[in-house]
Image (cartoon, rainbow, N blue to C red; front, side):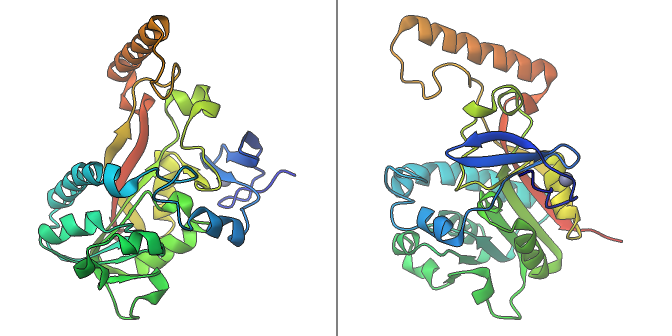
Length: 286
Ligand SMILES: [Zn+2]
């Protein structure tokens, strides 16, 4: 059955099937989504013990391998906030995992808080941060407001991102900034070889936006995007995806593929190799 697009209600045909889940696409909105939405029980099962360390869904060893990466990303993201004139105040991180970003934000001068449902992640967190972390957004005090709210790689996991953005918007101060990172559609991989895009991973990822449809999601809740940065990109995608082949022919082909993508990115634009974008939005002025 062809489901309607959750945003515009036009029928959204099937784009591809991944791991037994159907991903549908609305061309009018440039929005893709998993339909039907997996059951709450199936979603809960994804994030139980083993999500951050293990061989199943999620990360193989978040607490060691990701820590350095998070440090680099945090540096860039805090610099982006500084460039927007935001250097202090209250900062809330939705889906803060083990709190690595919160630690960097606190060092940079913010008063930090976060939400994280995973007991596995909470156990790995610095106890001085854990005191400021609640299990979910709903558990915050009714009057809690923040100058900065961040949701790095979170919205695409949620069954109802509209409800989440609405709830986050309600927690922003009038001059506040909402910053999100999501995987984005639009690269040569998502256009030409979607079955090879590793971000199509239901039931973890349920939503896929382009930069245009993500801006529209935020605009629907009175937020206007004031800055966009490439969060990450990979130049070589089509040959030997995990880079493990020892065959000289495959390695040569992989280098040529990477070179071709770099040249393409330089000529056509970085969006052809971009996998993920950081969006910074402020409350729109009427
Ligand atoms: Zn639509």
